[in-house]
Each structure stands twice: as structure tokens, then as C-alpha cells.
Length: 480
Image (tube, rainbow, N blue to C red; front, side):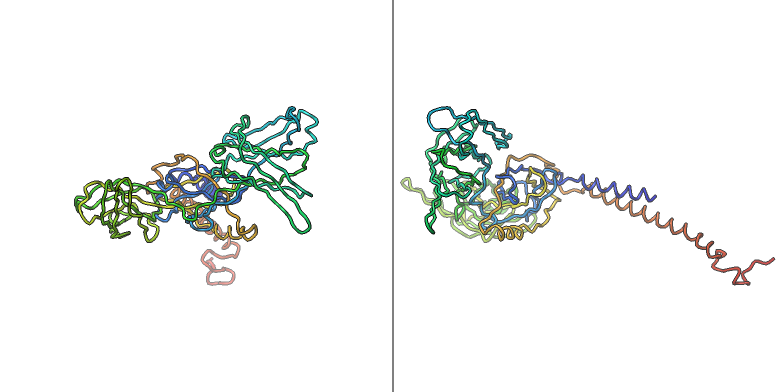
């Protein structure tokens, strides 16, 4: 029976492991990391994620690793320091031989290996001319295939040199075979005289976005091959985020509520968008006083969110004027909205809801790839001390350190609508049933052991089974 109890408990462990995290969520979005070994990453939520979220506090999403195990994850508002995009990210790069002088052959050929997404995993320069072997490896092949933000400049870092003044030309390619020269040129300078040092590491690219934005690779070739230079790092400077990020707008078509009145319009929205601004779109010239209410449940009372305020639009002689959007008192994630007009409205208004996407910061635990899973009626994300962790990393690496970018790829179905339905988790119930049965078996086994031990104790002590010793209690002795 003891073996049976152990077996029952052991049986519960696979049941717990089989309850995979992904089974509790409707959809997942694979995450592309901007770099390997970033440690911590940030990803911006988009409309498709918000439309899957069910929980009002956005606890029904999680980031999982390759094995489906949830990693520490936290949500941040876009204005929080941790949510701000990184200003600089490290790039993968490969050193190549400098170009020989003259118009002769290159003297080497490149052999490369890339993943399905274009990320270079191996680059080798095979020397075909012995003269090239002595040239410094100051040319660079830079992999920008995983960077999706606009790159405004490249920054090079190198080992200390006595003096450096070296120009670079830049080319872009999407297949490593066809290269397009860019107008941008960089000049690396590292000169020192007495106590003064002149240092320039950057190659500006801000005027070339249309040319290289879709390119996966950049090639940097030095003007000369007589300058010994050992590159130690290549970084991309990203376009700085706007101080006041413009909101993303959702435009909803509603219906008149004939019961409440002909000037009352109701709107529904799927998902948990962090609405902070509202506006009303109405055709033609108009001036209407509106009042906006919302609620999260159809049986809940309506709550006033904005108004009364006047929304207007006037077009005259080709010049249009319209009222600004209305700011709410805070973030509202309600699903049902209602507009009241102060008078009759002929056309059907459209409600515009403005929001700023929030940011997910997660810690890379376990093996990649990672994915964001969202949409569940029962699963809730565990709290994680991400803010304290990143604060400690910043203390060690500097206040400018930011989590590396990660990007949401196309959505993939998981449990679908099943995850969005509130139902009993049969695996959890079965797990508890097995554990309970195991406890009963253990208790029964313990009781049987106690019952078996009592006669043995009595026999050893010379008892007659009634608690009396015949040798010491003559009255208890049997009659002849």
C-alpha cells in the first residue's frame, strides 16, 4: 500500500506538468529579439493583443520560453522610464579583410550562413590571394535584419590605437550578393595631443532611410588598407521617441438606442484598450454638445467619462476647422460606450477612442524562442519584480541602459475561444482528486500499521490482552 501511495503522488506530477501554460491562452505572438543575450527585453503591445485580452487589469497575458514555461514579465505605461525605447542597440557584425589597392581582384570570397529570418549565424572570408592575408580586417559586415526601428547612425568601437583617421563607405544589401552604395560616408577619428583627444565614432545615416530601411545587411569598407584597426563593437543609434507620442485611434460604428432616445448612440469594443482620449466623427459641418458614458458590463450602471463638451467641424473655402480630441481623467478599459447629444443628430456619429500602447518587459529565462500568449478567462500572470531588477542592472551598467527591443510577429492560434470561456479546469480537479486519493491511501496505510503493532506490544509485555499481568495480579489468575 505504501508503494501505491508513492505511485499516486508521482502520478500527480506529470498531470501538473502537462497543464501547459499555452493551453490556457487563446493566441500567441512569437517574439523576434533584436539581439541575442540581451538579458531583458521590451515589446510594445499592438491592437491584435488588446483585442484578445479579457482581464480588466491585463493579467491574462504572459511571456513563455521555448518549453512553454512562463518567464518573469511586467507591464509598463508608455510614459514610464522602463517603457521608453532604447536609444542604442548592439548589432551582430563580422570583420572582413580590407580591399586591396588598385583595380585587381578582391582577393577573397565570403561564405555565409543565415537563418530563415535572415539573421547571420556564420560568416567566413576565404582568402584566394596570399597578399590579402596580410591586410587588416577593418572592413565590416553588419547584420541589421532584426532591427525594425529607423536607424539614424552607426557607432563603431575599437581597440586603442596610436592614431586613427580612416574613412568608410557604406553599402546596403538584402541578399549579400547585390549591394547598393549609399551616399553616406563615415570617418573614424581617434587622435590625441597632450591632454586633448579628438574622437569620432559615428556614421550618420539619417538622410538615407528610404534606401536601406528594408535592407538586412550593411557593409562598411575602409578607404585605405594601411591602417591597422581592430573593431570591438558596432551599435545602431535608433530614432529617438517623440516626447509626446501621438495616440493610436480606433473608430467605432454604433447604433441608436431608440429606447433611451433618438439622440443616444451606443458602441461596443472588443478588448482591453487603455483609452485616454475620445473624439466624435460626424459628416459635414456640425456643432453638437456631447456627453460620453461607459460601462464594462451590460448590467452595470453607466459612468460619466467626458462632457458635456462641444464637438464641431466647419469647412469654408477649402479651409477646415474642427474641435480637438477630449482627454479623459485616466485610463478606461470599458467595453461599452454611450454618447448623448443635446439635440437631434441626423447622421450616424462614429466614436473615436485614442490610446497609447503599453509595453511589456520580460526577463529571458530558459531557451529561446519566446512568445507572448494572451487571452484567458481563468489564467492570471504572476507578479514579478522586474522594476527592481532593471533598477539594479542600471546601477551596474549606467542609467542609460534599457531593455533590448523585441518585436511581435504574426499571431498564432492556441486554445482559441476555449480559453476565453469560463469553465472548470479538469486537469486541476483531477490533480486534486489524485492528491486526495493519495492522502486517503497514506492514512489507511498508517492506520493499518497502528492496528498491527498493538498485539505485538501486548505479547511482549506479558499482558493478558485486558491490561493485567497474571504474575503480579493473583486475582487475575485463571482458576484451576
